[in-house]
Length: 445
Image (cartoon, rainbow, N blue to C red; front, side, top):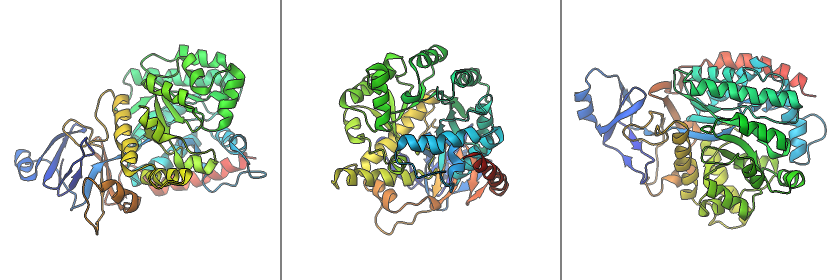
């Protein structure tokens, strides 16, 4: 197709806003960014998609999420309100994930994928758990992702909290799914994978070693790290080492691995992440909700850590995560100068794009240029003050809203146009999801 009449935000380095260009898309990638009349003349038989003066931008990226947590929305946590992070895990998440069967896994994913398409998030890195439905769970999620037409990397979070048999089953599920991905068993090309680990606090030395042995060298790990202080305390008790050091000892870190959160890392751990090229993802809404603190993201950036932005299972409206990150660091540090708009763009746009580009074997994702993935959104934003390359981050932070997204495209396929979903039936999915959520809630006691 040829996309015309758009104000194109490239998110390149340097960023550009192009008001006199069109995009020619073929075979899932942007083949050309050129003058509109020339492209139409050169490709007279191609479909024309008129952006109608809207902003045309790369789709948003979520670098850490949990589809399986969808049915927690609106659910009362049983018993007294949890007073700390470990109680939240025990009273909510470790009960909810056990209540999921494969059908609930499927619909937990589907409702999140609907949310992502509607809110312009075109790529997601998921971290899955369903201890009573492990075998085949990643296939079920992959089927949902391919039906939606989105781009994703999937894994199963191995843990010792449910005993040796389930830890082994989690390892086997990662191994099986990794083999499928490495064999190019997904014709869409939209599915990639990591080897999932829950967190240091629920993994023994032996299980970490088994996971390292089971994971091919070309595949990275995806693990929570130092989300709360208890993770550091547990690691010191188990090994005499802090979390990042312990993970390094077991060969978990590296340029393809992701550590989520990192709220309680010390300077030496930050230096080790930078040295090993390990990715760190920031999830400010979740950190605030769990009252675990605020990660030292600006310090990490200054020390060379590759920091991306995720949502930890919150809504897939990633501009909300932008806004949370922009504001919480100012409040936490009692300093309005902290976490500027360019810092947000660095983690949410540039670094997220670099991460996904690496995962997808060098296919440029998250930028509009020739040979980049045609993962795009249209944004119906009418600024009433000047909008420039220099002040765009603040227009997004203070003006953009996820309801302004009218069209979502992945790999050149239109998934939503003029706010109408084209690949998923939201009403049918919601009808089944409500039924499944009710039965899931009854199992969470």
